[in-house]
Image (cartoon, rainbow, N blue to C red):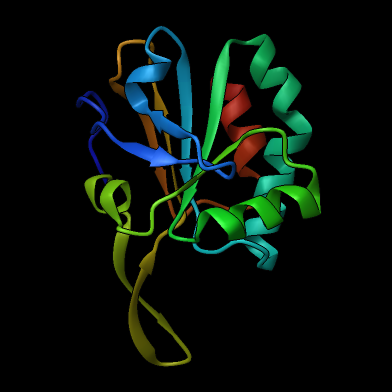
Length: 150
């Protein structure tokens, strides 16, 4: 996980509509950048829906919510449509941002070890500096936790 107080790594990734987004596009706004393992899985769906429910409050506070996984643009589009998600989902199939933000790590399930995304959320300030960082986030509580920080 990246250290609080460090410059957030730059990235440019496509969203669920194929439009490109760069961290630089959000200069002057707080950015909640959350990394999640996979579209349409129970924990990731709970996390995304929580951010969706609280999204108007994030907007009121001038914050942007960006969800990132290695799923495809098409997968993100289906995820957005299935749950009516009002925020941007970024597709990082090449693991560009995922590795830059140090969330691609060894995990284990049922005794098998594999590489995957560790559920992590960063709060990036208006100048592109990491203000807060949370790893091994609790999916259902993450959105409320981030809203409190704002």
